[in-house]
Image 1 (cartoon, rainbow, N blue to C red):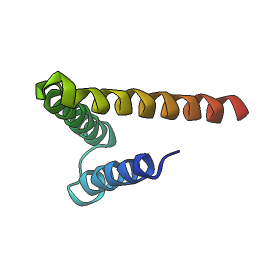
Image 2 (tube, rainbow, N blue to C red):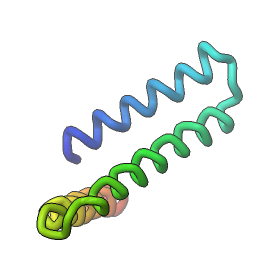
Image 3 (tube, helix red, strand yellow):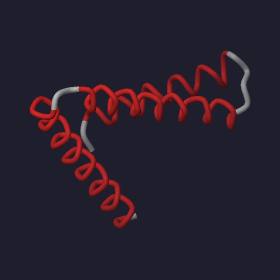
Image 4 (cartoon, one colour):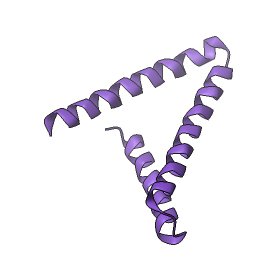
Length: 82
């Protein structure tokens, strides 16, 4: 996996642990909030890329497609070998 993916997962895990341990939330409620935060962040990134002119946005879309394919391939390989 890419180091940025691992770092992002660790940050989301830390936020989840903060809500559960310090704020006293139930696990499912904290998980919903963290997943909502992740989904919102993805939508913001896609919105920013979509707002760029087509000539400037094309490298970002190519990079996003490549990163998604790489991560999904790594996830499938991880599941397949377990």
